[in-house]
Image (cartoon, rainbow, N blue to C red; front, side, top):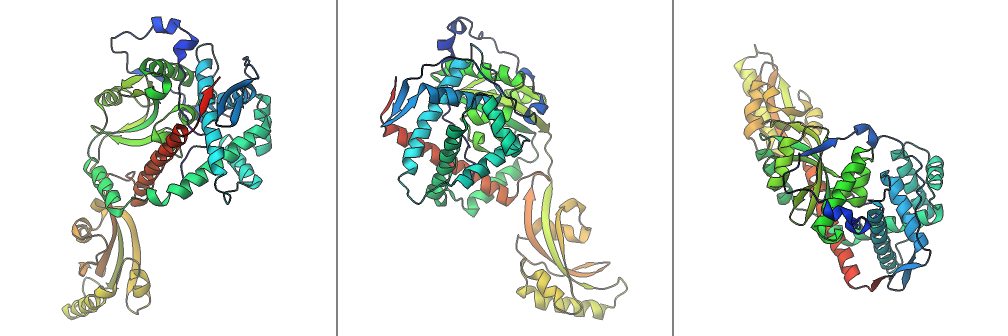
Length: 449
């Protein structure tokens, strides 16, 4: 479903509180250089290293969520999980941010666990938890046993870690079951999105990784700005961008299969401040903080490309083989036969129908650029409606009728109908999940000690 493994209660801490000197050294009004540095792409594939952190927290109760408590031990354990998963190096400047993020995660986890108990049939088995661990281990390039051993070396207790995963899986199942049907998108919505993609296909495009720090949850715009700067430093020092996005970003892309992946963005479809950064950044570069209304962006320019007006079409055909020297009578007979068959053909049955009749050949021509098709096929490919069957078309090989089974624009990398549908559905589901959590928080008694 694309929801996060670890609930993204995104709340960059008020770093100013941890280091008041930062308030005196805020970035000057002058526009900073767009690029903060170049990201090392190997960081995404580097194995997780054990990182035992030294920091002190009292073991008493630090917060209550309705009748559920959060202790200093819980908070310390969650901080170590965040550090291990993001490979962020804890410093005097960012430890408060990590602590606030961990506390927000724990508060929302308590709310999620309580909500899950309202659905007795929603039971997450030990096998489900072990499967989640196995998937995380594969991503880290380790066996489940070695992965858990690595976490233990980082000071993480495995029993609460398993319960964290159990709640995370249960919450994903609950959100998907409750809102899945409401997150459906119509064919017209998908087609409208595809038309927008097609219209923008000729414009420059940018493959973007993004992290968005929500000022409302970070303690204000200045806290978001300074928090973003701390994250940028950690990424440039080797923290994997995707892991940081998963834990800290409040953009919908944080819940994508590749966390932080915003996909290809078309020139002119974003806020001016972001467009200015897109134009200035080179592939591989990470931006400085980009303040916008409501928060701060960090942009990772993964790639750029010029627009290409490419049209792709999916064709299937039924044909009667006829040499170029065939008589007019033979051509007329083949034409009559294909015209009689046309009303019975669809994209779904054209291959089975033609292969079952003597003298007819059926084939799937796959997806191709219209410009690469035989000249006799190009007009049909450009103008016929999707799902239609053409009138007979003569080529040196014979007489053909073509089924136009799909069409899309924007080049070979343009998203398919299914990909666009999945993206829109995931965005809708993420927004519903966030409203759900916001309502749970509003209806709860949360006290920070």
